[in-house]
Length: 268
Image (cartoon, rainbow, N blue to C red; front, side, top):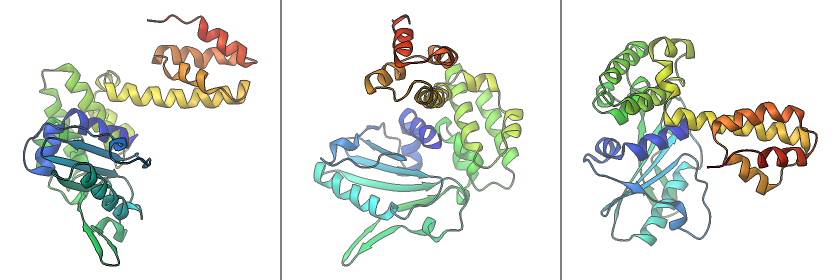
């Protein structure tokens, strides 16, 4: 869930993210990991973006992982193989406080090979940085603030000044989800408008992903293993139809019941 929010912010507010991490506002586009190697690489928590001059590699992490240094070195070499002319900025961003020494680690060493990368521990970053642009506001509560609730209220006030309703809803939902790492849900909902959250793209996406996962588990218990092609049909359903399937499956006794239900659904 937190990975999805961070990816959403990086993809939709790349100028804000690049100003923070690169020191200059650059419009970045997604770089697919499949462009870098014939071998698949674990892609969760990974953000790769590029412009004509630079590749930005970000790893958002809630907890430190032992394989992070190797991943950074691995991706650096893959990017160099594909784009030898481009410079590359690599940043691991830790979202919540940790006493592990791994959050300090910014180098990969193997015999005579040494590769360095940047590490940002959000809880050490000045809060003011994240109050200056919409794409950074959801991170403010995780920063070096002495009062997280007051910071959340500052963000809510800033969001209320946006004239674009979609921007309001997306930043509200992103802020609420990330704030959930450190604050109780009831406190968050007391400050942020729930109606705005529910209208956001990221909120709907997370809601649909959760609903889909639950329904597939229920179907596997109810009618047995669902064939891959049928799973793909279910994944393509909008949230409203997913919710309807969640009720209808209680009456299913076989895969044929599921297939028949799918055939009855309207298509665009």
